[in-house]
Length: 463
Ligand code: GDP
Ligand code: GDP
Image 1 (tube, rainbow, N blue to C red):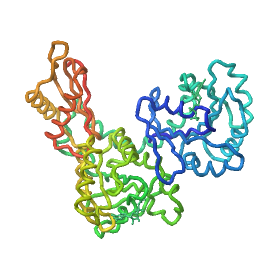
Image 2: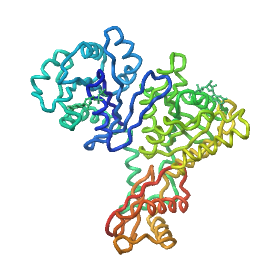
Image 3: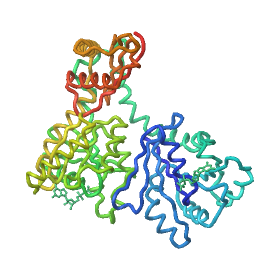
């Protein structure tokens, strides 16, 4: 599970600068979801080996009166859901009333909060930072976000303990997975599973149902749970995150990860509470298969692309449901399909379903694709098979010349599963153009019949 860091502070203290520094190696996702009062930015951060989700909560205006509502509306949810809150202040500008108001609010939260004094470059940092101790939130961490100074130390201090905590929690759960993972890695006894068998045949498939507000997630979840063939079990303890609903369908076990909170509906009062980006991101991380629900009438929005980006980065299997496919005339359907082709061209591996959660049309077939995606992601593929396919691909279309020498692929083996990873060894393989890498990936996909999951190919120089 990825830890979540929320950045709070008044405008202009350097939150965006820090956010950009932390997420630079990956695409930052600007989430401008309806129902949230202002843009908040969510990013997958990968910094100095630390991986986490970072949220820029937007500036807090700072008027004494407005602060509670501002906080409540924009940042409270992010603060609640975060594992760590970094409260940024401006070392150059010094402390002001807005900082004090924010601190007062944060002191009331049972959260790990840290004061981070930014812009400490080129000033006598210690004397400038001394006054921030008055905010009574402990040590003042000095950084210069614009130059990266102090950022690693800040993460070492704030994030490391949280990661240790989270991984201790997760360790027990992951142990089963790890022993399975070993089966997929090449070793002395790497041939334990027969070709084509999947590694999780006795484990339930975790299926996260995600999508923007109002696309029909709750309706779909209720539809799935309401179908007679489904047996819903008593839920074990729920977390502060999504609701986990174990169920059986056609004698197969699944756990629905319900990000819309169907079961908690009565308590849910407004959209802000109902829809949480962090909850969605965590659900993606924890799922085996992600079911992205899209509203046919709204089309693919930038937010959908953000969610897809996260799903792909996490290497999760994916099925896409275009919902509300009822009551549309043929002309409109054609237009929507053309538009979907254009915007979703880059994820050619995911199956697209046109459904109506309201009427139940097409809902049953979703599970065929979910099963297929899961099986594809966990399928055992022998070295012999991977090698044979590599040779065939190379014979059909030879790799290009690089600096006058032909790239040569020599050997292939499995590097893991979920998503399937293939390791290819050869000469000059690191210089292979992207077009040839894509060709290989598609060749493997076709030959192995892998659908619904990304395939990762790693290249290693030498034998
Ligand atoms: P936000 O409103 O809190 O997101 O603040 P920004 O990240 O937009 O930064 C506000 C201003 O402070 C910009 O002009 C930044 O270039 C500047 N700034 C941010 N970090 C630093 C820093 O470490 N040192 C200095 N000197 N300026 C900084
Ligand atoms: P959520 O926020 O994603 O959980 O969305 P809901 O399930 O609450 O649905 C939002 C609205 O869309 C509700 O008014 C639903 O009745 C409506 N809706 C959901 N699925 C369909 C569908 O397949 N067709 C039509 N026409 N409306 C739908």
